[in-house]
Structures are given as C-alpha cells and as structure tokens.
Length: 211
Image (tube, rainbow, N blue to C red; front, side):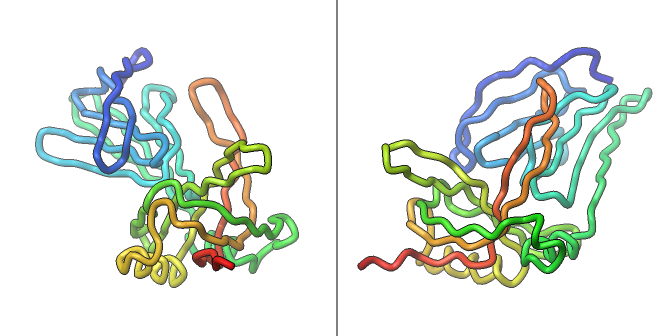
C-alpha cells in the first residue's frame, strides 16, 4: 500500500503532451496526461494505457483512476506479497449510448449546439464491450477573445464515422467543427475533493461550412 501521496515529476510525450510521473507507486511507472485524459502504467514486462481518465487519487491504499467516459473506473492496489491487483468497475455502455443519443431521460440533459476548433486530434479506443469511443477537447472563442474548452465524447457508429474522417484528413487538430449533442455533468473526485465536470455527448460533428 502507498502510505502517502506519490511525488509528481513533470514529463512530456509526443502523443499526449505535457503531464507528470508519479514516483513511489510499488515500482510501477505511472504517467498522467491530464489534457489528453490518458494514464499510462508501465512495469518491467507490461504496459497498460487507460483512456478517458481524471487524475488519479489515493483511496485507502489504492491508486484509483476515475473514468470521464462514465463506463469504466479502474484502480490498482498491492497484496502483502508485493503482487499488484487491477480492479475495474464498469457501467453498461448501452446505457451510456442511450444517454448520448438522448433516448433516456432527455429532459435532464439539455440539447446543445456549438462551433469551435478541435484542440487535439481525436483519440479513439474500444470499450470492454468493443464499442468505439472517441473524445477530443473543443476550443470555443468568445466575443471578447476569451477561450473556453468543452469535452466532446462520441460513441458507436458515430465514432466510427468520425474516425474515418480523421484518417482521411477531413477532420483533425485545429479543424473548425459544428457539434450537436447533449450536456452531461458529473462529480469527479480529486486530491482536493469533488468537482463538477461537464461533457458533451455528441450526435453530430461536421466541419463548419465557410460562407
């Protein structure tokens, strides 16, 4: 078990950008890239990459990675003999997809439309049910020059279409897009307690038509 908060060391990665490494976690190399929402765990003979994660937190001797995709939380802990245990808690992804398309309790998740630039090339991964999930930050510029960021998630066939557009070069980093989706908010636990995080579950993502 980890008795105190691990030390943080700044790192940079060509794919995920700036992040930090946690030292003193049972000999596991833990690298966290908050902007990309990615955590990478490396041992002497294995590597595990977790997508869609908030920053890790200590909870009763476990290192916990809360999921920002609402369907997979993860954690690691150590047995007395020194071996590591990985723990996953999953939500039914079908329920997530129904919420994303507004099929359940739509009134609780307002429909939103917005235009902005893709801050980083969209990342894709398969859920444990093999459904494709895509995510990226959207930069939105206000009338007074201020910039706000929105977390965009897209699921299933819509994510597959977006992935094809990224591969073809039609959509990528800095592309201006129109997004239609549904606003979701959750509480994310961190080192300083819980904080609200908003995400957009997109149903339409298209390049902005220039007039």
